[in-house]
Image (cartoon, rainbow, N blue to C red; front, side, top):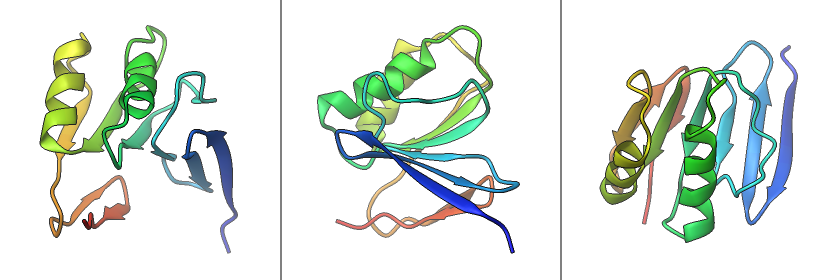
Length: 109
């Protein structure tokens, strides 16, 4: 049995860690305790604190690559605002399911 940990980061943000998996970060706020390790960042809605929290992490220089899952407009904004070419930006819409780093994401309205 693998262990799991969910840590609240404020502003409705969470980091989900499952042993042996890449962390899943929900709606990061500026100042979230994101490590420099590889991560999947899920921005569930376009409130400024969430995409600004994601952007703050994306602009860090000493970090591993990340995959960002968000709406088309948030993905486009974050992709333009970061200079890293090894990050992935995966736009989704309600009903569009995808799997990234063993995390399955199924957005809804």
